[in-house]
Image 1 (cartoon, helix red, strand yellow):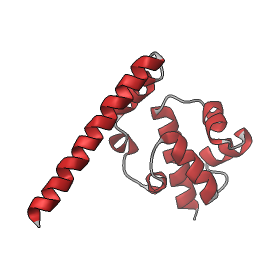
Image 2 (cartoon, one colour; image 1 turned 180 degrees about the horizontal axis):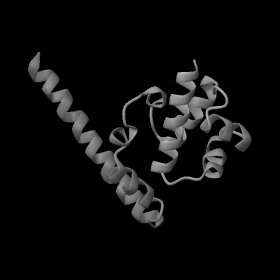
Image 3 (cartoon, one colour; image 1 turned 30 degrees about the vertical axis):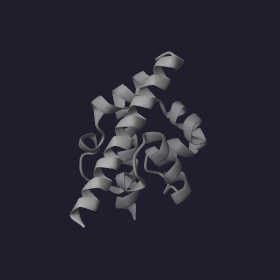
Image 4 (cartoon, one colour; image 1 turned 90 degrees about the vertical axis):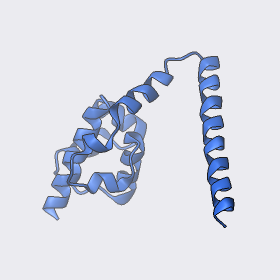
Length: 121
């Protein structure tokens, strides 16, 4: 159990640093009290599943990523994460245009996948 707590705390700290967030920012976004978060990140307490879900949401990863022993920096695509952060700095109309392009690309992908499925039948 102690190894799992240490692994979770290491991964949470690394993800926080990769996303360039302070502990306070993580706490505000997740709703986890700062004292509790500090104890989790320092490996002093075992977080509940609901707390892990909140933290995974803030870090934009699946909860399973918090338990992985491999290098999370390979899992988190830094260029993509940086681009996503930059979207917040765009004007509202630019954001909407970008979201429409993303929606169009996703719809196009779905249509291609559906056509391939139909052709394969």
